[in-house]
Length: 139
Image 1: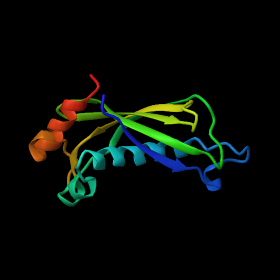
Image 2: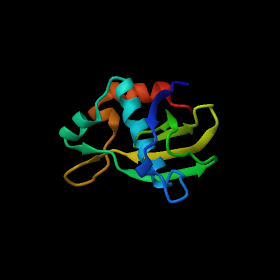
Image 3: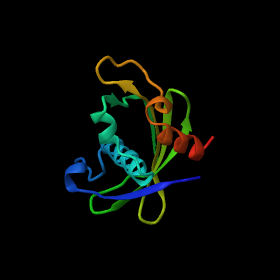
């Protein structure tokens, strides 16, 4: 299974009064991971947007396993969980420096025209990108 990795140095501003990373920051880190896997595969999401398409999140699920704290470095692993004609699901693991899983997540996206939010197939507008997702999708 193809997996992309990136790291995030946890900043004090990302923690709550207990010194634990505030839960919403994990979503931001997943988006960093999603951007990284797209780049690692040789594609550019900003160019997709410039061409008039966006990929909104239609579902996000996260499971928190072990708290992270200020001063730690989180590793974000990202992969393509599934890819169909209209939907792409990304899988994520956020890990402590020792490899302990801090959180797991999935995000489901569709591709739409920016002007009217009508769904469009990635295969129609970017066949190489679609083929790569089909090739590396987990299932």
